[in-house]
Image (cartoon, rainbow, N blue to C red; front, side):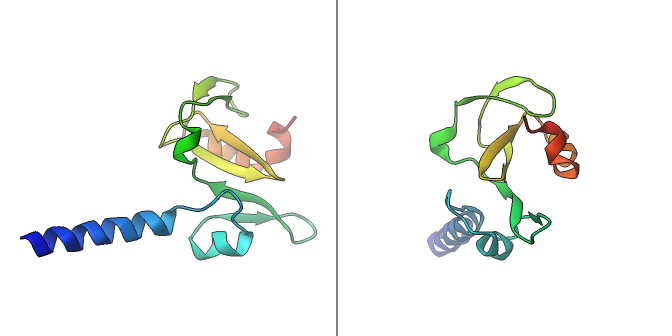
Length: 106
């Protein structure tokens, strides 16, 4: 039983480590971890999925799509676009932003 718990814990930690990326993740790193990468006209990464870090939890932000103010949490959807991080109030706003990011960036 103890061995089974240790194996399960190791698998959970490995999965968590595979999902976690640092703030300075490069587009190639994002592709390796399964993150979406959109490229601009010059072929450079313009938009990458981003998972907020625990240090960002509680930070007040505004959704670029709906304009709602909310606090970042562990389930908050986010992307990096042209060097800036954008957070979304719900899962429905993220695909809308990805479809046409320039429409929502001020």
